[in-house]
Image 1 (cartoon, helix red, strand yellow):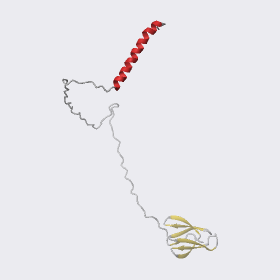
Image 2 (cartoon, helix red, strand yellow):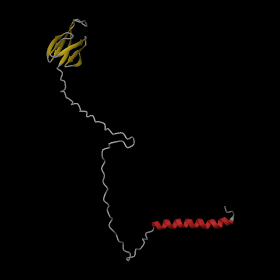
Image 3 (tube, one colour):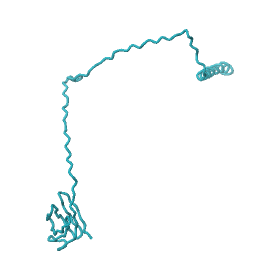
Image 4 (cartoon, helix red, strand yellow):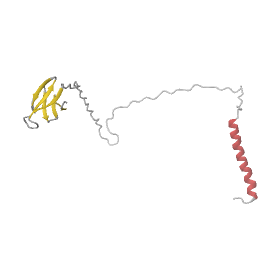
Length: 156
């Protein structure tokens, strides 16, 4: 590089010129002076020519262009959705467990159950009014009605 005062005399005006050009550009961009157009210069606008669009269609592919083998489309398997059958909600009869009449816990125990307001004496695996007694204990019974199982506690 240039050493001493000789470099300073050359580089200082170059830097000042560059900064001056930058400042003039910035000030010129923010000034409100619009360039004046002469009335003699008229602008002729020619309509744009529209080109007709090229149309195409995609045909069926008979063979693979790279392998040369014939194309066999896969068959679509139509799966029919299964019709959902809405069953009405299961309405249980009014069941109340009142207690064991005889034989606590053995196979011959008889349980007192109130079904739809009528007291019934039932043994295990006995069915009355579509209600089957599956299991019985001193404080709970397990009952099956139309395939559904429910457990009832003794009524106080």
